[in-house]
Amino acid sequence: MTFQERLVGAREARDDRKSLLAKAPLFQDGVEIASLRIRNLSAFGVGGVTSIPLEKGMVLTVRLQGIGDIPARVAWARGDKAGFQLRQRIEAEALKLSDLASVKLPGSGKVPARFEPVKDHKRPGFKHS
Image 1 (tube, rainbow, N blue to C red):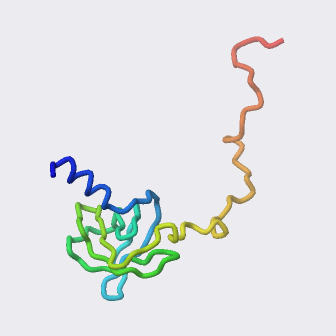
Image 2 (image 1 turned 180 degrees about the vertical axis):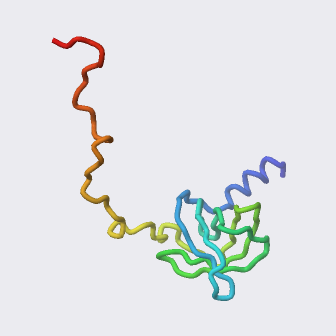
Image 3 (image 1 turned 135 degrees about the horizontal axis):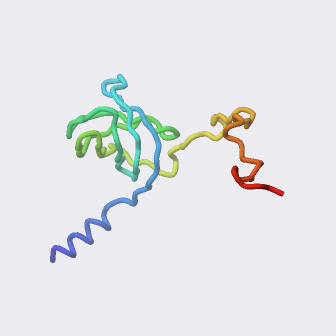
């Protein structure tokens, strides 16, 4: 088997990833130690940016909204970026993103006068008839 065939096989064996942007807390021994900004998610993995640097091999719990607490191992870590191997299969579509009912809408929609559109389009210095 050639290198190219192995590379294609490895890509086919890898689960489909869902690109998204969500947040999840990370726990170790029941204590929240960091937060994770999820960038991609698959059936057995999560990748993203963490609030603190992690070490490869750490065993943590990732709390995924709409899915629950999932045990995970840090598969790789580079600075504040990390990939997690989940200990159980998840359905990426089950991840609950923000609830639109909880999104705060702006107040009255009134803006200060200096930010309102200009109503007078006359240029200064010109005589207007």
